[in-house]
Length: 560
Image (cartoon, rainbow, N blue to C red; front, side):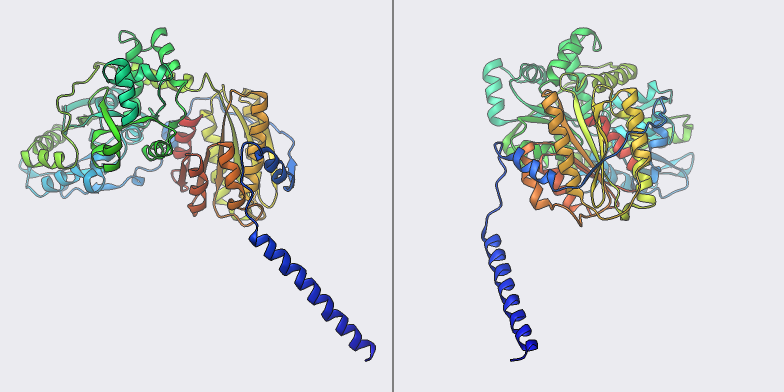
């Protein structure tokens, strides 16, 4: 055999040996089980993953900060982001903002059915046919539009009267047309076992009993954002009223709120987030309107409903300098809705139940409500301040509009971060950069945060989970310094991961460290992001370029 033949033969043998080694390695790997992450080994696994990542520590550069109050009107998207659920059928009409539990679909579409029939009934004012236009918009968001004067409709039917009082205080003329279009009540839902336990101890169950039991650390309850949610705002006032009915903003009421809030694991961005937390066993109870509760058989079987606060009877208001004609249209629409068939339809959809319940308090003016919201923002995390790391996607696909929008949304929303909290910033593409180490959100840290955000540039791949690993490690180090801090991660991205560690590799670690990860997708495929947020009962936001600033502002307002 010549040398060429020997060389080919030897090469074939080498290839066979290499193939065998690879095959055996793959076989052994495929048969091995993933390492389970536990409290004992999580630090070791975190450190190993962290060591695999190329990390750059950027030099802090201060940016120019705007200390003026936030401009709500500039943050709000175009009103066209909110669907018109019923269109007007005549040139003479009124536009009405309606809360979502009655202007949605199915059992949440009561007012739509009434409005459709009204528009087909040849109702006239001054000899002219008239109609209504219904816009589906949550009460808190609607109030933001009205108070900021960015968009004022002819009529407004929020869930309860609290929002009407707030629009009055803002200087927008607000006149009640109907105190109640359809009946509803907010309630505290307690797991049946917990309900029986509290009742046995206190002898009865009402809102005051539950609130005091919560303040005494005898149960764990969640609620929704009192800036946006009718039930959340109602509960906030109920808490203050429980501890001092005569002075909702006095020291006694504030002290009681702080005791209550100290036992709240988190304030939910959505009712769905609260329900998921309850299913996982995190919560003994949460708040919800009866109409929604009545449509959920699983809740009715496992929870007991206790009414609280002011009723949610969907009042109807005329707003602004409404003409006599528009007020007449609104009055005729309110009268039309009182027909027996529409009230019976309301009952079918879950409204008009708990009719014997009377509001626990009344006469809370808009100025007090606004001050109560501000108090909530200031005091809600006082006992356990937050440490948050923002994880920003700076991969190549974020170039141009997406990254510009991410930067704009962070720069505008940073007004809501809260001085008592600590903030850090990480960015990622192929590798990870620590743009700003975690620090107390002083004026100086705010300036460094602005400078770090302004310097973000897009290029390279998308190693999302590497960015999350670095954030977890930063927060873990922070908690060693301050064990009382509550860690949160915010991930801002436009797409799917294509580099670094995978979701399967890190989900056990995320669960073990119990850090909620809120994900914000910029026109993104959110499936993987939702999976990440669901691990520790956080929320995922799909925000496009029109409303991302407002949505992120709401998220930060609740969590920070």
